Image (cartoon, rainbow, N blue to C red; front, side):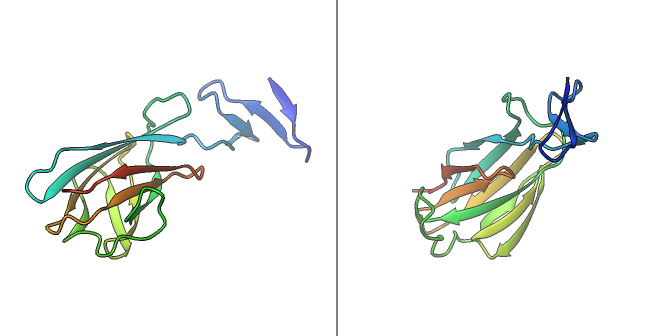
Length: 146
């Protein structure tokens, strides 16, 4: 099916991806959801697994870039005081770059949409991880070690 936008551009639904396309370009954001799994603490560390998902709840199958923040509350009203002893670190999947040490990060998933992280804190500071998806949605998880 094809139709036109208010600006006269041809719009349609891709048969391959079921995404809205214009002139062959995907104009919808496929990465709209995620699951965050926080493992039980092992010593002063927690393993964190993030799986990025599409609108149907399926794992994405491409590399996606997301933002991550570490806050003192689930409401994200204040950044963590210290952000842990060593803070967030990348595990086996994905890439992580600290923009503000232990508090604000940009992350890139693996080609299957997953990120493996660890969070280390010897002081048991209350911390919440906020994942900012490309469509503006924010998903928050408690990563406090106490």
